[in-house]
Length: 478
Image 1: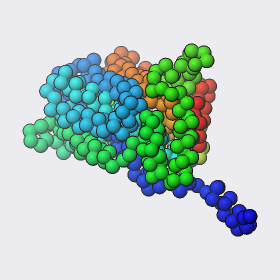
Image 2: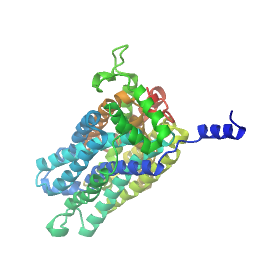
Image 3: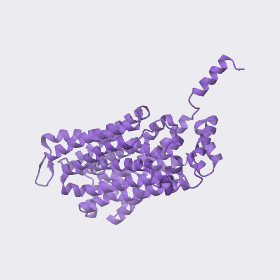
Image 4: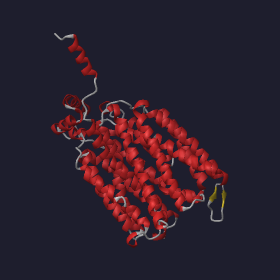
């Protein structure tokens, strides 16, 4: 018979948080987020190289748009195949291949002497970005406890934005040191080529650090490697919790077959599961608000409204710093207030700020070269653009990746991420490819009016379709 003291101790033990190895969980999550950093850096580095590409390859608006957007075709393929291959070969294995592709792409993009060669290397980089975009958050979700999974998964977006920020800083410093992105820097190579080569350092670090993290325990159990999965779970959560978690994972994997695309259909109706439609909607609306126009064409945009190349690159740096601040705020609150409220606030904020940008651009005069003269609306445009970036990175930037990494049940997580990632990057390609055409066709005001419409529609989508996932175990997702 237990004493009162023993009973109290037993109750305290039952109610206390599990004996997690928090330091190890944080370490492997940070390693995975280096993939996010490279995702951001590889996406943002193109921003400062557009003038160099136009000069070196003699490309016009359509050619420039494809040189910039070509990586996104690789991203779409990388996201789709990585999600499926990760179910076959493991999350860590796919990240290792991504690290190698980052290295090859960074080197090749800098040495390219023609558009075709450049596009090939950028597509290889896109494969790496696409793989990292879906596998890094999925890996973090599969090793993190539910009670702070959102915070750790949000590190991915902070890493993405930090990668963008460092690309902007690197581009600015290199262009400033050389005099312009098209001017010669070291060893008789133009500055824009060095902008790509800087990425070799974090890419090599990513490859090295991946050798020190374990495979996802949920993948190991999925492949029937229960002993290996239990060892990893024990290292993550302690022995008592590992046994319980192992049983939960085994129970959640009810279908005794390899994950496949047909799992995305509801077996009762034969139609695509509602959850998959939600994933597709989250993935596409994140792009329909036009955020990557700022990330990829920021320098072009600000030069189009009268700023010099140096000032435009500096504005990119400021936008990157604001983005990091917004992501840090999200990290602090996402597990407290949830995912859905952040999405709603972000959509509403982006709609308002985009409308203000449209107003500023629509009321600007033009010079003889067709550039906009914002005049008294210059401050409004700058503040609205940075507020727009802030609202995106407070909400859809990190929350979309968090939700895609956690919302799918274990059995369909890989294929669910595959189709959602494919949709996200194809939509990204569409937005990025069409911006130079919209710029010359309907102007900045017209282009940003379309993005404002996307933000407004995203409010309706979140209200009607998105359900909260805060605090749920992955085994309880459906």
